[in-house]
Amino acid sequence: MESPHEGVKMAELTVGDAKVTRIKVTNRAGEKALGKPVGSYITIEVPRLTDDAALDDDFLSCVKNELSRLLPGDGPVFVCGVGNTEITPDALGPHTAAGVLATRHISGELARSVGLGDLRPVSVLSPGVLGQTGIETGEILLGIVEKVKPGAVIVIDALASRKLSRLGCTVQMSDTGISPGAGVGNARKEISRDTLGVSVISVGVPIVYIFQERNYEDN
Image (spheres, helix red, strand yellow):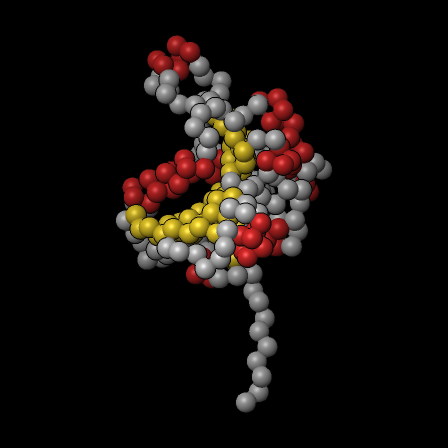
């Protein structure tokens, strides 16, 4: 699929019931055209959960493969679930992080004996939000990255959308980082390679709808 914009590359493919759109911004012209920094942006769309509540293997493999494309080939990975578990629309990150297997502390013969020898070291944390801790999420992550020294950070967060059709059936990924709260007008400190010094992969699902009022002229 050819992009109409200079500095922007686009590709679309279908994997089972999932539609994958890959966009790569390659230069300043692309940044200006899309309003996004240089980097890769991936959107995976699936049928609405009300149509089919089961997540098939094709979809799960699709998410795995697209995430793998953004990650470095090797090295430790730190997974961060951003959000507030006490607020349902903001709890996606922490709940997802709770399902991630931490392996950084399992190594050597122990890792091999339990079948984890081929897995890269993974650490995971849900740091809460500024209102709970009094500390910016970016500040917490910077301290952890300096100590743990991961090859990449995966940040998982709930997203906001102006399209109802995207809610709960779209997974969005990017290697340009994230600004927590930006979708609802409460942007916090950016979490990116510029602020942490390592590759930052954002993974999000739109679950909050931003209502836009429209003005209609009388006929």
